[in-house]
Structure formats: structure tokens, C-alpha cells
Length: 120
Image (cartoon, rainbow, N blue to C red; front, top):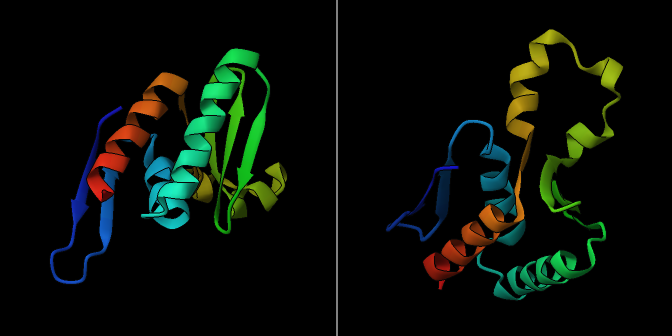
């Protein structure tokens, strides 16, 4: 998974670019975490705990939600979660691909550590 963090020097806003299939992780970072290091720490602590006890955990956000499931991270748009599978037609498949992402816990931890260093 490739990613790049950018900061707008004019207004201080953040932007992230993730490789195809992982775009939702970038949306989640910007919209749900931002520069809130306390929330970032909460997620990192929970990931550490999940690795030891292998339970599921979720953090429901305003627009994006994070799920830790069997050593895997799943991030999904809340809008997508609320849609029935039958409601998704072929025209929305590209939207769906950018609206959810999966990755391994170790890769996700690396993203979070990099994000912490970037916003700090």
C-alpha cells in the first residue's frame, strides 16, 4: 500500500493520497482523525490490544467507520454501510471501491505512525 501525505501551506489543511483500493483509509484519516492525536492514540491502543486477544472492535465515525476484524482493518463509508446490497448497481461500483478499504494490521499501524509524525 502506497501513500503520501501533503499539507497546504496556505491554509494548513491536510491531504492524503493512497494507492488504488486504499482510498477510504485516506478519507478516514482526514475526516475522522485529522490532527486529533488523542483519537489516534485510542485507535493505536485498541489495535495493540486486538493483536493480543483477537476480538473485533469498531470506531463509528461521523462519515467513516473503522472495524478491526480478525487481524484485518476494514474502513467503510457510513453511507455505504447504510445501503442495501441490492441498492448498489453497476454505476456505483467505482464509488464503492473508493468507499471501503481493507488492509493488514501491521500495514495500518505503519500508516498511523507515519500520520502521527506528519501532523505532529
